[in-house]
Amino acid sequence: MTGRVRTTELPTLRCRGLRLRFGARPILDGLDLDVGRGEALAIMGPSGSGKTSLLHCLAGLRQPDAGDISVAGAELTRMSHRQRARVRLNSIGMVFQFGELLDELTVGENVELPLRLRRERGTAAGRLLGSVGLADRGGSWPAELSGGEVQRVAIARALAGRPVLLLADEPTGALDEGLSRAVGELLRSSASAVGAALVVATHDPIVASSMDRTARLRHGQLVAA
Ligand SMILES: Nc1ncnc2c1ncn2[C@@H]1O[C@H](COP(=O)(O)OP(=O)(O)O)[C@@H](O)[C@H]1O
Ligand SMILES: [Mg+2]
Image (cartoon, rainbow, N blue to C red):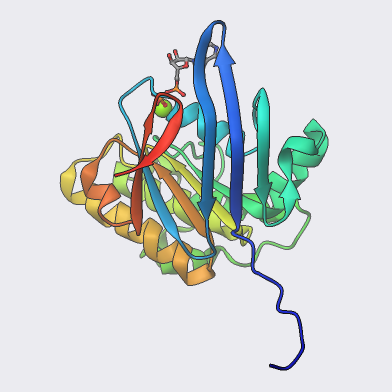
């Protein structure tokens, strides 16, 4: 015994008792969730089960009706809209179903967007594009990319701001099976390489199998799968 008190490391993402209802219908019903640094979780559940709504809460885009969400110690549920936007910009990366690149920016400019929004010099695009196997595409336009390439760029952009939490909503929903596996594995390896906690909402078992664990969203709660 050294006599020194060890501080327990909190999970990067910690949710307790989340409740959300649309009208009379409960979507989240006392949901608890912990995801540690570098850990990857797949959330599965049928369409309409509330996966996107949950991710919106985790991103601070929507306030749940009750419960607590903490991202690397920042208590999102106790913050103003503006404070949550700042946490999102500095600590959270997001990947969507169709990539959602900005068509009027080049691939490289898309990747540097999170840094530009933080008024940091964007010099990381080349390295980030290299890490997703697209080193030579920085000058291309999004319209010139295939669906799989768009998602690779979206992953590079989500990582550009060095997030502690990476959220992906049906990231392979528009891809065929072979590409889905590759994109799922890329998400997993990219997140663990930077030590980000990863939460992927997916109905795709191939993608889920690339993560450390899978939980199912049922009746507004997460149950281990
Ligand atoms: N802004 C909203 N207002 C009312 N109902 C909504 C809203 N967003 C989603 N819903 C409903 O909440 C349920 C869960 O939706 P969603 O979170 O998109 O599920 P999933 O992503 O699992 O398909 C669905 O029944 C959907 O119609
Ligand atoms: Mg959804």
